[in-house]
Length: 114
Length: 114
Image 1 (cartoon, rainbow over the protein chains, first blue to last red):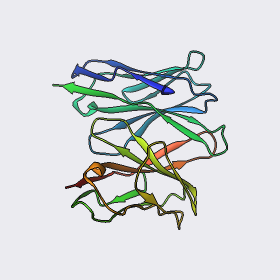
Image 2 (cartoon, chains in turn green, red):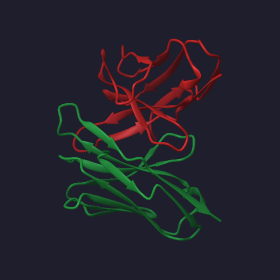
Image 3 (cartoon, rainbow over the protein chains, first blue to last red):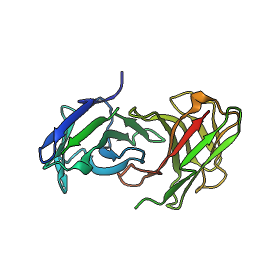
Image 4 (tube, each protein chain N blue to C red):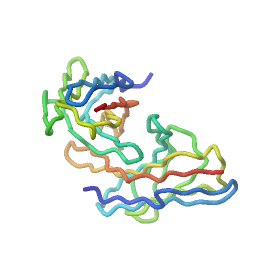
């Protein structure tokens, strides 16, 4: 079973609408959680980082939340734009092991229609 | 902006050819990774390195090999390409220190084997 689960797998919304993507994880211990955006044919780029003590963090129209007790994170996109169409990947980092370990979700494919 | 570069971006070759995908980073990161990703699918770790002369196989079995002779350089080689190797290959390096654990990705190398 994947230790990082994302939902929904895909999502279609109209331009200007808001949406929320979910990420549940079982990774323990936990160092931080990042949301990456991957445009088609490009490499992923980090959007936000959430550490254990943080609940909410914003980056422009992107707002990430973290509930470390329930091991859930969400990424909320406000006033979506066509350029938001991409895959959004949740990655959990565990630096507790000697060499560090990254755990990837399968991503949510977001499509924004005009 | 990430200082990690992959070449070539696109490559179309015939079956049986030997190919090397280049990856270089100028950020001084010790940890580097190769991921394989099919269109619309998740990233699969195929190789990683924690420093010079350190290479390990990842979660997904791959017929490719890697080397790490210099910190900044992490090339991936396929001795005899097959159509099943057609995919996108993403190289990444990891910024550690503190609690960051941020991955920086290259733009990817899209390989097509005919």
